Image (cartoon, rainbow, N blue to C red; front, top):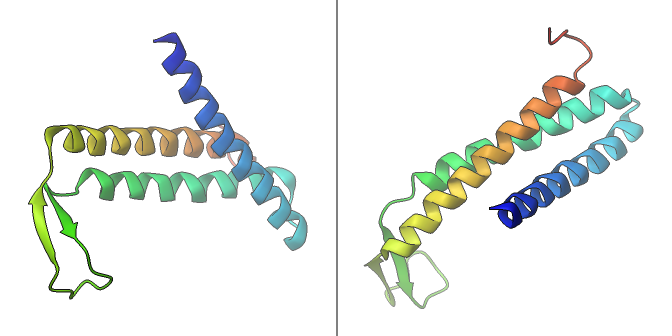
Length: 117
């Protein structure tokens, strides 16, 4: 459990750090304050992660199979996902939603326009 918690913290930290770096660069270009840049960046990326987690979690039990470069290719068919694939989809969805919630919380703490307490 400890190793998994360290990997999760490293993943969340790297996503939050990369988002902070990108939002600070964009804030520097637009002339926004540091805290405003950080809060908006974390809000945006957190929201994208939440929406992505929703769509990954709502993926059905069927998976595309076969070859073909187009959605209309006749060489493709549909197969049922294995239980492992379904568990992986739910686990990935939970990970995305959790990271999104953490980033939105970071954005709320960094937002100086409103008092948290």
